[in-house]
Image (tube, rainbow, N blue to C red):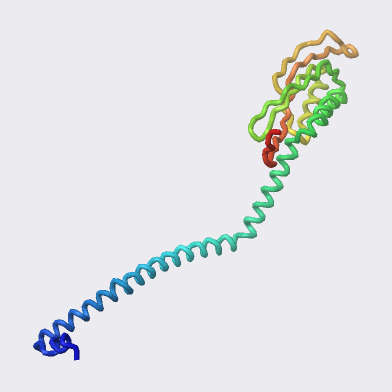
Length: 199
């Protein structure tokens, strides 16, 4: 037998018990620091992950329960966007809209003395397109023209009105001379295509 083991076996009983206690304490400490505490930390981490996932699951379930409502809201907002876009024409529709303004004036019996489109002014997602107008006609004709402009599917604002009497008479009635600014708006599409490099 190994002389060191024999030396330990010859020790008094209380010393052998004390030595055995030290060995057991070292084993317990090693188990505690090497296995138990890391396992407890991992368990706490997994429990925290579990709580996070549970709360996310609850949120996802709540959203899933309300999904038809969200879809209905989304479709309603899409319709509102389409409606708003019909009121804001794109660049191709501007000449048609300007022509319809001129036609409305003539259809209501007004004499168009000036029709001068101005340069458009960008304002974020839309641009203002002003048109300087000088019209001649009766008060009633002007009122009908402004009413018809208000009924257009596109947004057209009439502003900067300057009304004066005209030197012309129509069938014995006095006519008015009106200078105004008709402003329409167009939707500015954001360019989603990648920028082209210079040649």
